[in-house]
Image 1 (cartoon, rainbow, N blue to C red):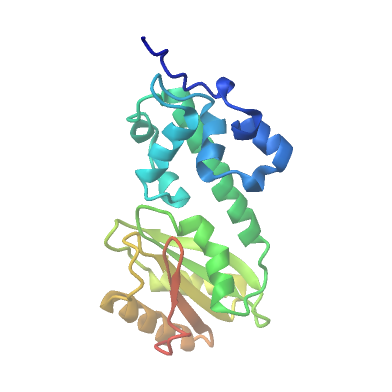
Image 2 (image 1 turned 60 degrees about the vertical axis):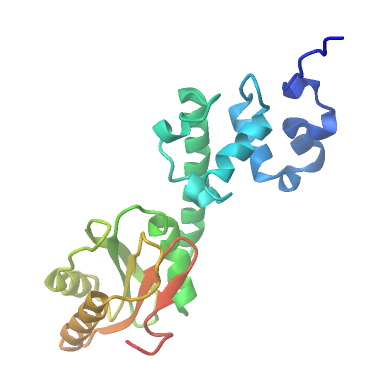
Length: 232
């Protein structure tokens, strides 16, 4: 007796297993990452459901949503069942999530710890494939006057113009600086170049009664603080 082909359509699942119905009935928090992505793509391929396809995509990046957010449209389209429209939906949703984290970071107006700096800058630079150097300018109450990118470089390094930093500090009336840059490699260990530029900026700033309060190395999930490690 010939068996009927298995249907992978979500339409044939029980309501409790359908991601959309599950979200409506039980709330978004109960859904797995794969189920949420399945809602975005709507359908899978001929041989697997949207959820199974989503699990496969997630598995390719170690089930890490931050890593998934780094995939290009072309990379997403390498999965059978993911065309341009579905790839764009995934990329757009993850970008919305990244910007939402950025909005939370922008609520931080006063710095009281290295964690505050990490929360302010991680959504901006934590997932970048290249290195960027940022400066946070503070007033005498440690309130943020401005946070901005000083330079952008390749994955191995970036250039820092000390004169430009001090010029901006004087224009803003800043009395404190916090340096920050990301390590796309994920390593939290400061290089000799990192230490040298920290000392260079620290000494130059002191001549103008401006203090370098910290230097953070930021990665996707963690950070290294020069001040916390007493190497500033």
